[in-house]
Amino acid sequence: MADIPFFQMLINAISAGLLYVLIALGLTLVFGIMGIINFVHGELYMLGAYIMLYAFDRFGINFFVSLILVFIIMAPVGMLIEKVFYRPLRGQPMPVLIVAIGLSLFLVSASYLGFGIVDKAFTSPYGGLINMGGVVVSKERLVTMAISAILVVGLYLLVRLTKMGRAMRAVEQDTDAASLVGVSIDRTFAVCMMVGTALAAVAGALMGGLTVINPSMGHGALFKAFIIIVLGGLGSIVGATVGGFILGFIESFCTTLIAPEVASMVAFGLVIILLIVKPEGLFGHG
Amino acid sequence: MDNHLIRKRGISWGLIALILAIPLFVKSPYYLHVLIMVGMNVILAASLGLIVQTGQISFAHPAFMAVGAYGCTLLVTQAGFSYWFALLLASISAGIIAFLIGYPILRIKGAYFFLVTFAFLEFIRLIVTFFRHPFGGSRGIIRIPSPTISLPGLPRIEFVVGGIHYYYLILFLVAITLWVLYRMERSRYGRIFKSIAQNDLLAESLGINLMKFRLLAFVVGCFFAGAAGAFYAPYFTFINPACFSLTVSIFIIIYILVGGMGRATGAVVGAVVLTIVPEALRATGYYEMMIFSVLLIVVVLFLPGGLITLPSRVFSRSARERQQ
Image 1 (spheres, chains in turn brown, purple):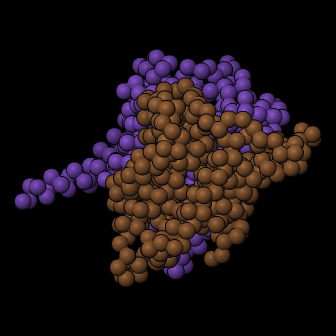
Image 2 (image 1 turned 180 degrees about the horizontal axis):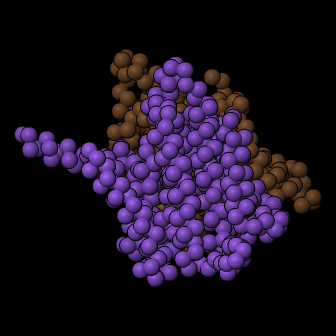
Image 3 (image 1 turned 120 degrees about the vertical axis):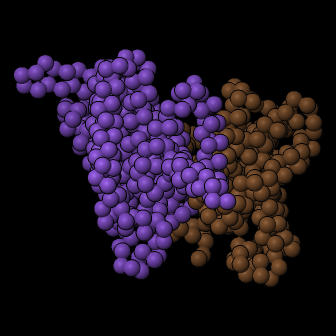
């Protein structure tokens, strides 16, 4: 334990952090704009991993083409979920959460029946390790981190600079006022769920190469995503980024120095305390 | 009017006699087990239903079940208490912990309340997993002794899994739970809870102390969750952190929503129907989960009042059709 150098822990923390940000990004977007907890986020992540497994590993499609395929397949799924299940319950966050839980249970059980109960895995094309003066990182982790960073920045720019992003922010601030000035709520929410779903799926596709794939993998991812969005402040992209890194640091250092359970205990303890004393998150305001 | 009342009384006494007599003609341990599970789910659903009546959907119910289960087991095995005293003490501990955690978290609302109760559930599970002594870590505690009854002048009764003892024990616990919950529902408290659930701001403006009543419902609800946990431990003879997962809370919430929230009867109907139907269909594991998930989605989208509103809906529709 003690022989793991500080820099290795730091690198582990940063790499885990970037991957966690990726997992939480879609969830925080949907919460921020639509005000709902998209409980099915974890299962969309899981489906992304399975699509990647079949496209890239079984059919031998190019890694990046497969990623784009995941995006193209899953984005309409998100739109469909919004249209069929969330739209009739708009303005009622708790029923939406319950329906999302139902969808999550359905997708998990259907996936167990469809994909089987055996753990699956694929290896990304970027094998091997990079050694930087005693600190070791795997190449596939580096590639995943890079894609994650690109997606975070991309989403931030989408929300900040594009017309759709402006519409999203308007709806986030005041749904009624936004629709009064001509922003289509239906379209904004549909796009928001499309982007959120695609992000979840791409996160699953990328993480699928680093972990085992099974129908309940979404659960663990969702739990982590919850921690992250609370730490950083619900609904904020910058907050999710900060939250992801905080969780990465907590896990890397607590796991190495004490025990993995302590890492989760600290994280969940922090979540409880934050929700009680500062629900807007560590770096949020208002 | 009087006749109606007498008939109603007669039906309920008949039902009670029937429930008491079930072990006389149901000999199969499997059917008894299903009935015992019905009882346990009724306690869990009705007690969480009380909390839901005040407008707060808590996902932490299994955490209090765990407090009851671990507390009762440790009091028996480590401290040498009798099971009956341990059952009571463990349930009270669940109530006390509910008071301590409920006080800060019950002011949180909606999605944030979901997150904080979820985090609390995971936190309790992690504590139990981390401290191998005395909680047994992720493997939990196994070979939990069964309760016994030894009264002076009577032969010692040893509880046997698959026997009728646990059936009557759960029946007793269900009776106490429902008695307390119905008494609360029909009293002033019930009406206050309902007003809070319908519009908490309005209720508060009318001078109702939201925190006080939410805390009361939370503590009472969690007390019975603790009792259910204290029953669970010796009945299954083992407990571990996986027995008290988020899936358990989701299932309890499904019972309440499918049955109908806002009334104890809804939770009871939901727990009874949803425990028996999957068993009758022999739908286990993923098929059971699938049925539950579809039911849940359908009920939330199309029957927001739950199954208990089904008869009145059907009747009012046929009445409307007759009028036309």
